[in-house]
Image (cartoon, rainbow, N blue to C red; front, side, top):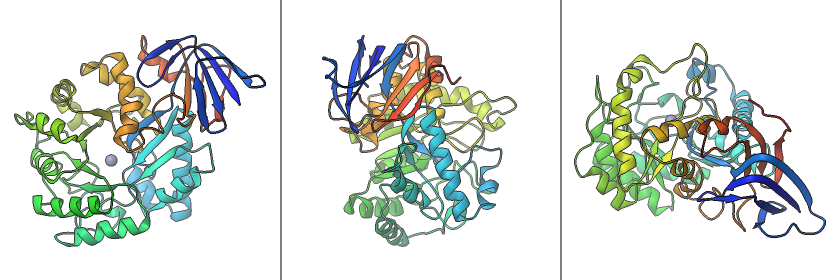
Length: 392
Ligand SMILES: [Zn+2]
């Protein structure tokens, strides 16, 4: 048994002063109460304890370099697997203890996921495997494309591989030459078939959707989360259609917003995205003000400004779109865990939950930058990092 003591604790919902977390093996035995006799006491004065952070959309196979697609193409399977493990470790050292990988190559994320079960230096991974896309479509280089009734077989094949979620590219995307984000890749009928097959097998569906038509069709088809939901047009951004956010909220569809960017010298957002940013943020603010669930799917790995622990940079963006500091932390802890099927196990510091704990210097509710000052990280009760000084 061990006990962590700090200045304050955010349990995934609310703040508790002068806390104690009692950890028994891989689980939290208690929050508060006496330290059991014989327990190892770890004092973290001035620190805040939080649930390990949860990112609902990462790519462990992309290495956050200037050209992750070319870097991936230059590696064989063993090298890619090693790079994915390194990406996972980077996430953990930044306090991100659970990630949902929404697109790998060769189903390698499933192997990393399975290795993580006995390796506390790796995050807990929810894996989609290879994304479902069209021939020549967005991220086609990760696997083969399918159309029409073949989407059913594509879902079944992924289920047999043991994926946790189906990722479908409902629209084109930004990192595939020739692909246009504003255009749909699949018809409503194809999306319906895919969702029906996935749900029949007990698998949720995460839909990458930029263009308005793709978002509308994904909602109508009954997907479980919308990734990006940028409403991008060829040269600008659409207003969100009236009533759509109410429909998304009523259906319980999660909005997984692509927020979080690390300031990196010499690296920036692509100019096209930068120009659209005010309109993207205005739409995100409308989403935040709706009744829909907002979480952060950072797309970690796709660029230098998106390292694998970048979700800890998202609260600044979340505050810009109107979330309170507490809501911003919920969006990357308790709400995110629930959104990816891990409510009851991850995203909270409470008795019975996995002992995934992040300790940072200062108070992240008063200062979003505190999440960059990692003091300690525990994965299922094991110390992945515990330094007496800031890693910043
Ligand atoms: Zn992505």
